[in-house]
Length: 435
Image 1 (cartoon, rainbow, N blue to C red):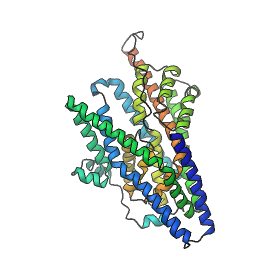
Image 2: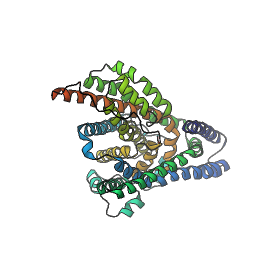
Image 3: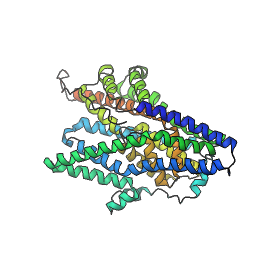
Image 4: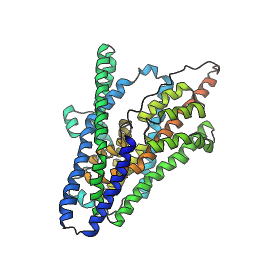
């Protein structure tokens, strides 16, 4: 189903761009085609599709985070291994955001561009991101319902986390019942997202057709600069950053490492699904890189959920590209706030189909940028999603390999006998229930 949807999205994108280019070629700005088709049907259909996605964001984030917290084992079972893996995933995502933001500021994709967003942004009342202190203070909501109505994602995240912790602390039969409710609710939200994404070909047809009908050749080149910036950073992460880090910490030759993850890399690029790649990632770690089943079985499912370095790069560059295209230049304090927001959202949207593209919509809303900008994000998503997935899953492999190496050093330092058998885990891995 996913491959069919991806094919339909690609066809819809090509068809929409062709229709839009044809309309621009044969009609004037005041023609009936522009009035009733471009500014009528295409605008209305595209906006309805974007609004359907925005409609699901608040309940999706709340339910998925509560479900994730309820699914955690007791923190005492994490121990050194769990905390180390968790922190390394966070560090990987943080470094990816800093690198993406730094390179985006240097390259400045979208600055001075002509993609039809300048006029749209001037009709809005753009809101600037709060300062870092305001962001921290504002995490705690004074009114839960106000946070839900306004779609304040950080406040919703806070409420979801403490709700999940409260459920875990009940530790009785009530906990299982409530956890079961949130598990079912999470399944419902995943199904709703899948249903909406099945409408994506129609939505993208409208969005891309309207975009192409107003986009000049210069604007097309500006969009290409955005695509190349994202792909360039992701390829650097995959082919240089990860292998160098592995070489420095584990002494594995970078070329050897790249050859061992080849199957995993190709599988991720072909499926664009972190969860679908879990068995291949597990096999790569245990059979090719010599990581124990204990570490691989713990690190891989966790990484598929929360290690979203590729998505973080995507979200950062996309937001700055749209911001530049609308003539909005963020000061340093707001760039820091944006980086923190991307950090939390990248973790929160792990496992959500099309999560990175959907979450860009939240960031655009925070900045007061036009909803029409989502046309570019969704139109280019299929080109970037596969590279994002590959960066995410190879990051899982890197972190698990580093954890295995440091655990070995810990055993040697403490004089433990390496012949002691390690605990074995079930080879049964999570099913591919989401992207």
